[in-house]
Amino acid sequence: MKTMKIFTMIMVTVAMAALVTSCGSSKVTPTQGAVEIDVPCQNYFSDAQFFRGVGDGKSQDMNTARLKAHTNASAELAAGIQQHIGRVVENYRKEMDVAKQQQFGQSFQAKIRTTVDQVVSNTAVACTKTLREKDGSYSVYMALEVNKDEVLTQVNKAAIADKEIQLLFDSERFNQTYNEEMERYAKQRE
Image 1 (spheres, one colour):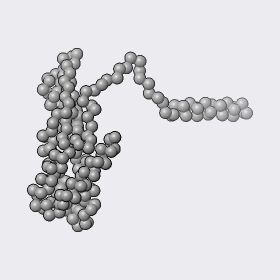
Image 2 (spheres, rainbow, N blue to C red; image 1 turned 180 degrees about the vertical axis):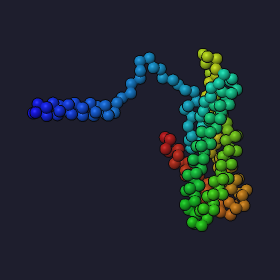
Image 3 (spheres, helix red, strand yellow; image 1 turned 135 degrees about the vertical axis):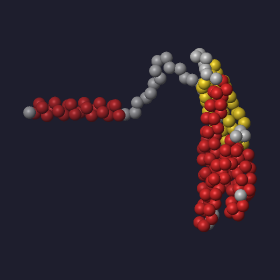
Image 4 (cartoon, one colour; image 1 turned 90 degrees about the vertical axis):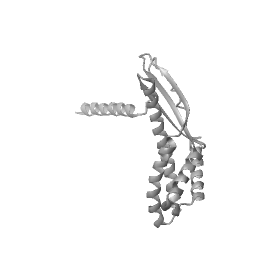
C-alpha cells in the first residue's frame, strides 16, 4: 500500500513537471532552411506628416495585381485616417457642452466618412514594386500616402460646408486638437 502511494506521488510529480515544462514559454527557432523574406514597401508607416497604408496583390494579370494592391493599401490608409479622426472628434467633443456633443458627433462622423473616402482617392504612391513569380503570376506591393495637412484641410472644408455642423464647429480648436493628436501619434511610433 505504501509502495502504491509512493508510486502515485512519483507519477504526479513527473506529470506536474511535464505540464510545467510544456506550458512554459518556448522559444521559436526558425526551421532548418527557412529564409527571411524582405517584403517590398512594408517599411512605410504613418508619422507626424503623412498617413500611410500598405497593401499587396497577386494575380495572373499585372493590372489586376496592381488594382488589388492599391485597393488593400487604400483600405488600410482609410482605416488609419478614420481611427485618427475618430480620436480627434472624441477629444474635441469632450470640450463641448453635453447638449451639443450628440448633435455634433452624429452629423460630423457621417461627413468625415465621406471626406476620408475623397481624400483616399487622391493619394500619392510612396512605393510600388512589381514582381513576376515563377508561375508567371504577378505580385505587386504598394504604399500610399496622404499629407496630414491635406486631410485636415478637407475635414475643415466639409465641416464649414454643412450649415448644421458649422454652427457647432470651431475650426481653430479642432485644428489644435487634430495637431495634438498627430503629435501624440508620432511619439508612439518613435
